[in-house]
Structures are given as C-alpha cells and as structure tokens.
Length: 309
Image 1 (tube, helix red, strand yellow):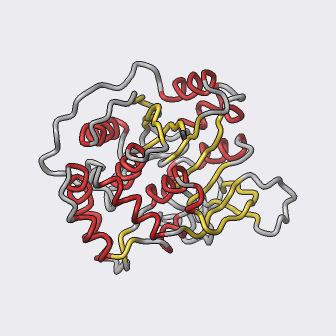
Image 2 (tube, rainbow, N blue to C red; image 1 turned 90 degrees about the vertical axis):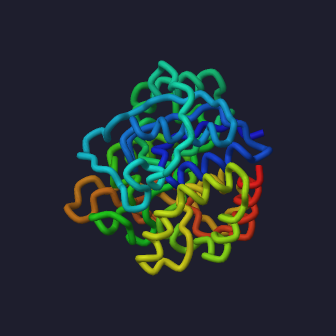
C-alpha cells in the first residue's frame, strides 16, 4: 500500500490527479497540503474540498504557503480558469474546513510520525516542501519518494521566461532548495507532458462516462479543451495526472534516467529553468530521475478506473 501525501495548487489537472490517487486500490491518501500556484490558496482549498466531495472522501486538508518565497506572483488562468477549476458552473456545495496546522508543519509532523513510509506527490510549486526542509533539515531523508510535476528537459517551457515551466518559474528558490535537499526524486517535465497527450477521441470517450466523477471531469475540462484546441494542441494534456500515474504505478514509466538537476535563479530570460547535467560535466551527484516516456494505454485505463468509481 502506498501511503501518500499530495501537495497541490489545485487547478484542473491537479483535481484529476487527486481523483486518480483516491480511486487507486493500492493507494491511501493520508493528507492533502495546499498552496498558492495556479490560483491563490484561498481558491485552492475549496477546489480540493469540492474534489473530495465529488469523490465522497474525507481527507485532512492543510493550508500552506500563500505566496512564493521571493518571486512576485500572478494566477495562471488560461489553462485553469479564474477559479482554478475551469470556471466550473453549478459547483457542488463545499463541505469541510482545512486543519489548523500550517501545511509545512503538517508535512514535518507526518514525516516524523511515519519515517520512510510516505510518498509525497508535488503537483504545484515546491514552496511548502522548501519551507518544511528549512524548518527541519532532516525532513527530506524521512520521505520515501518525492514525485513532482514541473521543469523542462529541453528548455521548451510555458512561461514568459520561455525556457521555464510554470511550477518551477512560480517559485524557483523553493525548487532549488528542495532539489538541493532531497537525495533523490522523480520529475515529470512539461515537454514529457506535451509528448504524451490523450487523443481527442480518448478524451471524448472519457467525457461520456456518466458517473459523478465522469461528469465532474467533463465539466472542469471544458474551458481547458477550448484553450488547447485554439493553440492547435493535438490532444488533451495531462501534466499532473502523468506525475500521479508514475506515483501510483511506477512501471508506467517506460524511459527514465538519473541526472543532476538544479534551477536557474538569476538569468534574465531563463530564471526558473531546470538545468539538467546530461553529461555529468559539473561532477554533481545525480539527484533526479527524469521520466521521458510513459505507457499511455495504461494511463488511459487509470482514467477509466477513476471515472467509473
């Protein structure tokens, strides 16, 4: 059984990734920690609680960082809508409240309670994890696995700093603190996301699944679909669900390599870029498993499983 904590900025694809974890028979989600990223944390928390309500789950939710460590912040609304859930109409009632503890403190407490047992899946900026690492330098060594969605492997990003991906660009200092502290982690990059969409035919088939989860999936995805098609993207992109798929089914990763990965903090045009030392030129230890290929038939089956739950 995978004991999991999900750290999220709860946009559309985050909600789908959370649904995947909640419906996987080999996973027990222990807690969900939240932070500002795609949208402000004040919107993230109701998005998480809405998703949990649709899935009929009661999981502790913790409020975390409301801003990056140093960077200015603005919302990412093209992909996620102003509410973070695709401008969801007829939103179900939001039930529940976040726990009293700050997310970073909750991460430390859970790691201390269950050292070596927890898989941490980071779906947004790494601010909460960096804060936990600074508060307790032993924290990274107590996490069994860290899987994170973010970064670029070919310098083809999706931000104004065109070599940088959103999650890392949002808080580069937090990403560098985290990657410097964790001896190993697994990265699902923006380019790997672009290389592995669901076909539009597959998306349409999933959208026809008439369950509460299926209808929720369809409704939160509508604006994202319009945006992706306006850009000529040849399928439905799955940034966070692909990271979650690797977490719940590690063998879904078909190609991966271990490299030393760091984050550019100063470049006028490259701040937030993940720098991957493919040839070992800097002599630094390999700290990140970089996944570059996934079994998309398997990913599609995971989506069917979660939407039919």
